[in-house]
Amino acid sequence: MGRKFYFINDSALSGIENMARDTLLLKSVESLKDDKITYLRFYRWIVPTLSIGRNQEVDKSADVEFCRENGIDIVRRPTGGKAVLHHLEVTYSVVSNDFEQFGDTLIKAYEKIANFLCKGLNDLGISAEIVTQPNDKTLSDLDSGIDLPCFASTSEYEIVVDERKIIGSAQRRLKNSFLQHGSIVYDLSVDLHAGAMKIKKGIIESSFTSILEHIKKDVSYKDIVEKFVNAFEEDNGVNLEKKEFPEDLLVRVPEYTERFKVMY
Image (cartoon, rainbow, N blue to C red; front, side, top):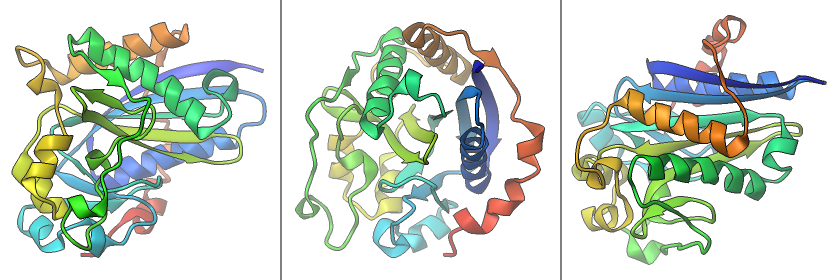
């Protein structure tokens, strides 16, 4: 049995293509019988994109008219969880069938991944912490009839700075593998986040934070990714092999257009 750890650094892509690529990696490792493969992937978005959980209703998760007027795309994720606006961020995904490395339950994988994410932020000079006690806001904190956004509450093993969330994640598990992906906020446009998700600005300001709020100078996307890659390697005791997105999977991206596309 072989064990491999790969690092993929993708360019900015559409929401559908980003979700398709994460899903294709998940399907590929699920199908392996002997080899244990882990992918750490980083990516961005060509336009601001609101992703909603696989079981969410669009009208309860997004202000569709605001999104249309402000050039915000909407895409459905393969994972659960709540709405996230992807804008001015670094997005990560971990895809693996190596339960020996990440544990065989959702919460064990969350904890393992939280360790390297927190270390990456710490290495950037940010006093990030791992949540051990969930903090859920109720719908009474929000506008009536709106789903709770991802960043408005913190679950166990998510990452906060001064009690405000800086990374929001979601996970999907198959029989022999899992996908966890998440948003690492670089900078925050309060108006855009509040408008896209139909929530009050105060909710954004009290619940969200960003990398730029906690460091003295701008840091490049490349430098941020490098910190997280190094943190992953150190925390897991492995060497990541840099890899382009597999060509045999890339040709299958169009198959997923309808699965993740949101009509609005």
